[in-house]
Length: 301
Image 1: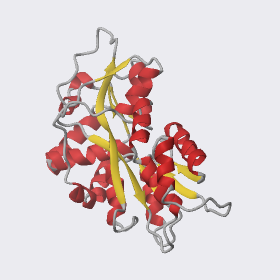
Image 2: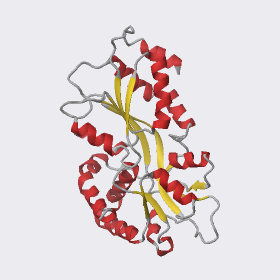
Image 3: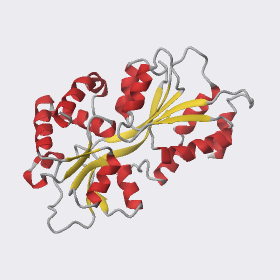
């Protein structure tokens, strides 16, 4: 990784104590991001001032902050952990109009179950559609689908199934009395305790739980799963581009950083191709507000 940074520094300027810091709004988990940012500072000389978000409102909180600051931008770089909000910010003119953002790496939306289930736990469902069956009543765990990857997944399902079919499923799922959690990591813990028999979460949260010895297992990807890249975007400003900003953007999407994120479980290795949902992203962005209002009415009445 040091070699990469030295190469990038060739396009920068000589070090000066008057250099401004690079302000980063970061939706990637703090525990994974901080070591990489520290390495960037050590090897480049550029200080990064990160602003992180809470798990409960992951990505959405920072996206709303960027939208509110459009006329007086504070951040230089946005490191997102899913694609929809980055595309929303692009449509709102938050990023540079040319080469404003890029996606890299991937996680996936998964169903998770106990690795050593009790005898009463039924076999895995064939599809997300089956989570509305009575056998799963009071035994499903998911994060509140107004924020983060859960919101993106639910909005993608809305597009995939069509609004009417999606509303029927959402209402049936809510009527089945699921556990609504603060975030995806809470889903893992609920399933591990045996209170929920199945959960809807992200692959990185499953990996993190397994590394801590939590007895859970991810179910295979299926057609209603969603692949979730990280993103990095350059915030549009009236001032000239800070050289440290470009260095940080190149660094975050580099192969060594992606390899590091895979090693710690923040991203997953791309395996054999699986047919997952492929949203029409521009249409999904246009329908965020309507779909979110429907989700709020159903899951947070």
